[in-house]
View: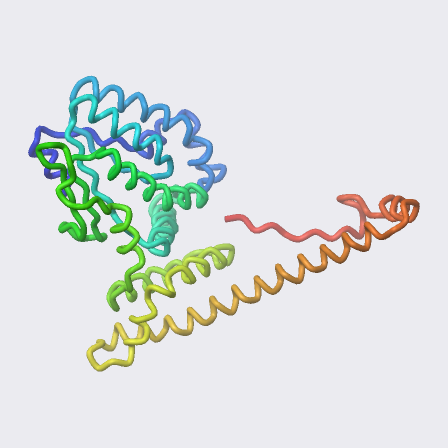
Length: 315
């Protein structure tokens, strides 16, 4: 939609640091070593190249399409200011996606790339978390500083904004600015039965296709989704729901219960381990100094016979 509009205005340059990563001299090497960490290593260089691209298109007055995650909300706001100062018309269109859909989309993209190419690009989860909250900070800056001529909030797959606002001839918002609130409202709304079924089909595909080391991450994603798809799951028994959709929704009850049970076990295990660590620490501190030194001297070092180690599971 946006690309078509910009093409009708003379074309555009798409500025996305992901497009530059494959040109990094160590890209192929890092992808072979561990594709899940490639973005961590190459990110700083690709961001520096992106900054140069911004300078070029502003200097040459080229139309720009810039995907923005919100990970660096201050940097994104500074970019918007720079474009406005350079005489550009700025339109900000926000795709308001709940955390569960966003995080599952990250895993799904990685999985599909691995199937297609043998390797994939996995967004660092900490960066995704910062982006998820950072987009709200950016929305507040857009509203308060009027950094865009037009702003809107969209659902995935839709071309009509669920919220929209624009500056008038005097440079003021035509309606009360509420970009951040609109994003939060859209993220928190209950999913339809179709949205729930689509999410669950993808979720089931990922559980079947990915290894056991992904179970915890997928459990966390399903936990994020549960409050939003609850109404759709309750509607599974309604006559208006088709058989295929009903089967998908009913299967989700079992998957959700199993994931909740696994998460509960992990919480209990973590609590037990923390309690045991506290007990050992208290026992250690209560020892007389001589006894503590003797105990320390007799503890097996790493690699000594009798030392227990747990196997590591890679991604």
